[in-house]
Length: 265
Image 1: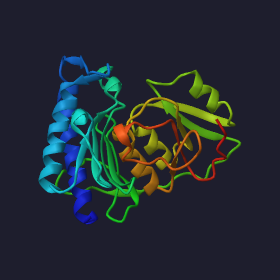
Image 2 (image 1 turned 135 degrees about the vertical axis):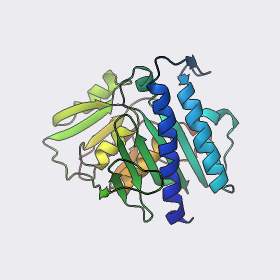
Image 3 (image 1 turned 120 degrees about the horizontal axis):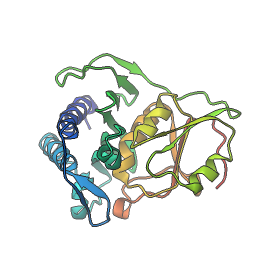
């Protein structure tokens, strides 16, 4: 894989998709439908998916592509594939709360090695560069040329005063019970894959997810966190969270900065 070519393509497609998402987000109204699994979908999901899918298939015709909006057609046995959630955090989008992202990632041998997470309403963009290190780019996000980037790195956590981030739309009692096992200085809620990025930048130390997610929800954020020195492990046995699973469903997981004293479930 030519990572030097991959990074700018992923970045540009995320920006193009973000523009279309914001065009619909800022409209007076938009339609919301339910998919077969009862999750919501909007015209923004579908338009962003079309932009990203077309761009990736043109640029990388030999690499299998998995996207949320085309999930029913996927039967991937390849060890290397691209995986996309064109609008992660659709519930946040519908409620106009801003915590939604465009997620594009490359998975190699079960590991997300490169990824971009773009939060257009928050004007934040995170991605892995050509050598796999994670950066945050400052605006104005010109499509042709990347702006100023800052290397990001996970925190050096204090286990007596941890910063925790958890889901905004899917937080439940089981999540709170697990968080209460830690000495927490403060906690915050965030939507979509932004939670991975907050751990990657050191704005949080720990992100536990005790709820349903799919690989396209997590791959890009996982790649960004890994490129900043963080880890993502299964909740049940603390083994690395792997990708390319049958059906693309994730188990519960924990994302964290090294040094956090993980508690048993």
